[in-house]
Every structure is written in structure tokens, then in C-alpha cells.
Image (tube, rainbow, N blue to C red; front, side):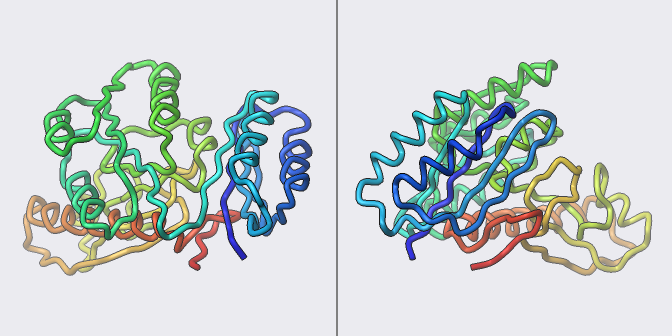
Length: 279
């Protein structure tokens, strides 16, 4: 079996599933699994399909683009090919540690992906992105729909296959998340579900816990409650200063986000009906 993941996203309307699956049937594709939902008027569907009988993949991709054009949808196809390097978009704010670690592991080949764009809501990391040889784009509009429209255009322009929130300190809208469900990976500085939201290290210190950690997870419309990909933890001394705990945590953040990106880039995991499965 030769697998590929096909994603469909756009404004909800009649006929999306019928036309998409008919197109696949006509090209001899067997659908292995299908996950679809509508959030805030945005339809999203992820299909795992057997493409082993497809004689001309280029024709299939052309046919899917035609369906997408007819229905004003975004349709993408990702081959589960270990030799294929996915295109990775990195969202950042001010902290550099996750960006640096992920790019380093992409260059060594541990993460089988090519960082194609850095998108920031703050210009502070622009010099670092330029030093790393990655295009940087600032999207700092206070108008969220306007900001996210620009972000979506950039993701299309750079043909991004998945997104890593490398300490991106903005909440994404349900409409944005729906478009890229199962393809946005975030790192949160706590062992979720404990201490979601802002100030997790401070919350941990105030609660007097002895073990804190970080969680890499898929992003959903529920803040910091998406399906867990991987976690790591470390012990703290209750006399430790907050800054010492944060420094330890940042090393774990970079490590776990990179690990989640590695797993995704090598097609070793996927999201289906709100749960992470490992291949």
C-alpha cells in the first residue's frame, strides 16, 4: 500500500465530499480513512488514501486542483514518502530557542523538512531568520482577519505542508485552525492538561509542584487542549527562581517541538477524529 494524505479546506457548501471523493474514485484511489468537520463555517477534510494504483500522480493533482477551483477550496496532496522533504512554516514572536533548534535539526536531516518561511507578529527575529537563510514576513496587523488572510496567502505562496508554532504568542482563530487541522504543531510549557494558557511556569511555581514539563500537541480550536504528541518533564527545587525554571523549560520546549516536527515530517503520526495515532 502506498499512502498519501489529501486535505480539503474552505467555506462550507453542498457537494464538497461528493465531488472530492468522486474525483478520487475516478483515478482508482481507495480511501483508507476520512475525517471531516465544519468549524465557524469552514469545512475541513483529511483523507488517507491508497495511491498505489495511480499511474499518473501529476494528472491526479491536476484533477484535484480543478475540483478545488470549481468549489473555491484549497486541496493538497502529501505523499508518505520517506525521501520527500515537507515544506515547514515557522510562526514566531520574540523567543529564538525553538526556531534555532528546529532549523538546526532540519539542516542535519533529523527533521525531514525544509523551513521555507518564518512568519512573525514581531520583527525581533527577522535578523535571525535572515542569518539562517529563511525568508521572514511580518504579520503584525491588530486586525486578526486581515493578519490571518496575509498568513494564509504566505502559506500558499511557499507551499507549506505543516506549521510549527515556535513560541508564537498569538491565538489563532477557529477559521484558521480549521483550514490546517492536523498540520499545526504547538509547544506549551507545561504538562498539559495542567496549567494551560498564560504564565504556566509561574502557575507551576505558585502551585508548589515538583515536576514541570512541556507538551507538543496539535492545535485545535480549544486553547492548549489539542491532542498530545509528546511530552517531557524535569524536577524543580521549590527554592528555584522562576528564571531558572524558565531556562530549563526552554531547553525542553525546543527539544520536544523538534521531536514532534521530526515525527510529523517522517509520517510517523497523524491526527484522526481528535486523537494522535503513530505509524
